[in-house]
View 1 (cartoon, rainbow, N blue to C red):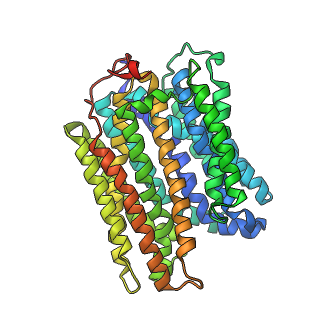
View 2 (cartoon, rainbow, N blue to C red):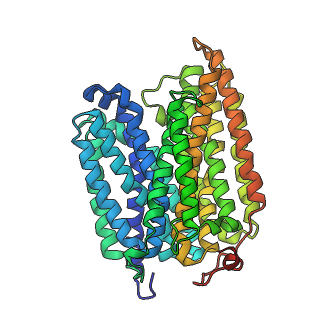
View 3 (cartoon, rainbow, N blue to C red):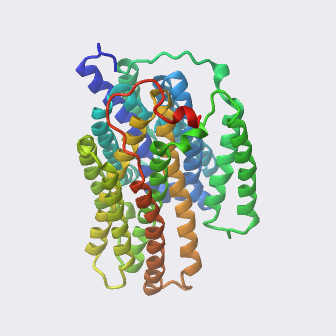
Length: 475
């Protein structure tokens, strides 16, 4: 922030941005708990998965676009618009009269959720210098993890108390508080960009390519990879994304500057985010199945079983953010943390019938401890290594590649479960299938360890507006 900004203004502005992040992150965990009640009242079991899928598709697809526009026009207006739109879409979800309306309103909610995810972490670069940014990125990562801890409990309380519609209405007061703080305390960085500078064609092609791509991966839960329902969207996505690539190489202000992928400080963190997300989602999606299907642990809310992992993420993300500026060879910290995550996945693969639930708890804590380190580390590297005018693009791309890795990983691992699980399923058969599944996730995640070892370390010192060495040639 500007030198004239008071400490109080910085604190309040940061609190407002943190609330904006909590607003978007909490929604993903709160809604899942209410889904059985929602389906019961609105009578739409066939649309059960699409309530979540619609949100994930639109939020993921909007992240790269929102990141670029934030770089061009300033992040404050996008934060405010994102929160206002998110509040409005949440209210619409709350008044839905049938499942089709809910799916459509969730898709709209995802649009504004993507704007928030793209903007919140990028704002750190506008508010703090790199040395403080590292610490704050750890705290923001902790906010994200905290939403996974409190979300299921809050969702259960609201569903059993005032009703499932309050799972959406609760976003209104939280969002209003965040808007007031951001509008009054976060300074607006003026930009010389104009509406005609927006790459409208590229934006449309990117959205037209990512949407069928994500739909295709989502469809693999219920259809074969070679079915028309899957291959059709994949084919459309390929055509649109190839067209997007060629268009982007010729416009003055591309939505995704492809020359960034030639830079170590961007490409390596993106790879780490993508491949580590596969391990993360393997735990988030399939550990509740391990608890209940193999160990026969009864849980009315399976999401709470993941609380130890999320607490480990919160702790290690906070600690990493506080100490990373003092670690000269932080690529080894990243590689070591990801190796720890892989150890946790391998231990999960060894869990069988008769094992103690405490073994699973231990294993997911190990996974969470490794994951928590990577969140602030990749963010700090990108924001310290790129010029300020590209920080929004770089930061949003980390979020995008992490989301895409989770989507693809879930599809592949879900197919592994479907194809290898014996019919009818038994605890032993499920344990053997999950053994293979967690091992696959562990092997894929080793790519992130290798990527960490080739990460080029950049000093966490104040940036200049000029491009770092090598970027002009890459451009």
